Length: 224
Image (cartoon, rainbow, N blue to C red; front, side, top):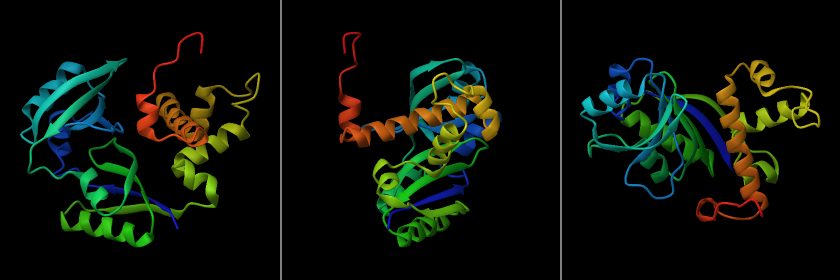
């Protein structure tokens, strides 16, 4: 049975620790990528110049390039040095898929989908072997076909349920996004991004397309 494991690991050795040391207020969130020479990371929490100075000074980072950014948040493609621990590759090697990855306080917090709970144990052991101090926050089996097929994380699922319960999707809305964010005790931006990812998972599953097909599809025009 497909399961979701939510765990936290140390940033030491992953290339993240140096960045946080250089920019203590840094917030890092990984962007899902299809084909990339590095890792696409959303970085925020400090001025752009300070973030780039931290990246440039990090010995664990070989190269970087700015892809996009606005409103205090920037997307960089970051190429780590060969000796850097690739968290994403470790998960992939053990049959897992990272659904969400963020690093709000210098430690990676991961939502990982596994086909069997034994895979979750293997991933935990791999992290422990690399001295990444893994801590399982939550482990649950997906219930029913819908959640398993859409790939919704538990946070995304619970957020959508809360949005429905509070009338966010009604016309007119009974609750604003800011009010819903306060109800869930998260920021307005975090709620917006969580909903966007949940919408993407649901729509991709409903249209029966892969993530690669969705990313390569042409942008809609006003006539679509």
